Amino acid sequence: MINRPYGVVALSPPAAIVALATASPPYVFDQVAVGEAARNLFSHRFRDFERLFPIFQNTGIQRRQAVQPMEWYFEQRSWPERTKAYLAGAVDLFCEAATLALDRAGLSAAEVDTIVTVSSTGIATPSLEARAMGQMGFRPDVSRVPVFGLGCAGGVSGLSIAARLAEARPGSVVLMVCVELCTLAVRLDELTSANMVATALFGDGAAACVISTGAKGLRAFEGAGEHTWPDTLGIMGWNVDPVGFGVIFDRSIPTFAAKHLRDAVVGMLGRMDLDLGDVDRFVCHPGGARVIEALESSLGLGQGALDREREVLADHGNMSAPTALFVLERVLADEPKDRLMMCALGPGFTASCVSLAA
Image (cartoon, rainbow, N blue to C red; front, side):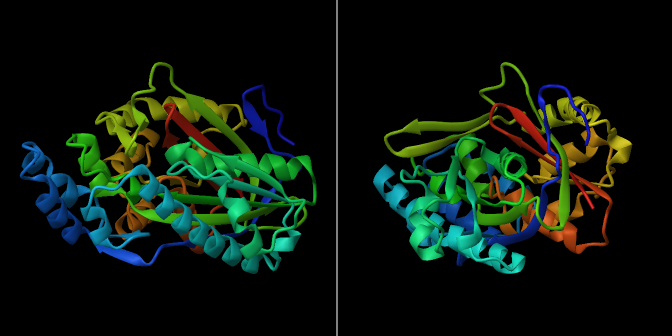
């Protein structure tokens, strides 16, 4: 057991990730085609479009997946239309990722005691796990913990929440599912640089983890921490209006991360009785090509160190919360590393970290 002061989550007896799975929706968008479609939709209405167009070429993305065919995004969509698409697509992805994770763990849905559902790209009440109960076969007495608002940090923070819940009831089975349909937030009516960045970056996806203290897993939780910087609410988030969510992206995110992330991570590691040298591999949320470069610079990793992050970004785009779990899946398939540190940045503006031991 590692003793930690208030503000850092103590995960002991150690919960473990028993199984991990990811899922992608059926429609695949080539990045070149997305750029040309965006030019047709925006260039005649947004005078800064051509100045911003290189974003589509410099994101590091080759392809992305979405819950709707590309033509669906060519028309202005109402809030009810977006919500309908969210509910249908999110439940399907929830069930696909959760079923695969449970199969890999050798468990049935009826053996799940707690479900943590992380999603910030749509509103569902009843929440997604309730809508999936009949199809999945969860027990009527399963505990449900829907989590909203963590954005890109949701996958890492969701792991921390799920591990604490598993620790609180030793031997229980916790299923954590992240589902984000970021593409549904792309807007035709918002002629802003933030909306162009979102159009260039966003993809849809889901990931699920089975977590328990009762079995040896892929990785054991050592500790977790968060750091929220004051007066940073305007860096990342949603604006909500009658049409739906409108993205808030501050162009300074890479610069902010390069300048401030290291001290925050060092502080969180210190409260776990660790330092940067104790981490064998950082597993980071790849928010974009420039963000990955900023993470490597801030954490002193060396250019190109976050190779799996670049691969996931190239293959799937920025899916918000599940993206870090897509990276973790690839890292776990590599030559084993003793200690992994997951790290993601999200609205708040907040850094979320989880330490995983072999």
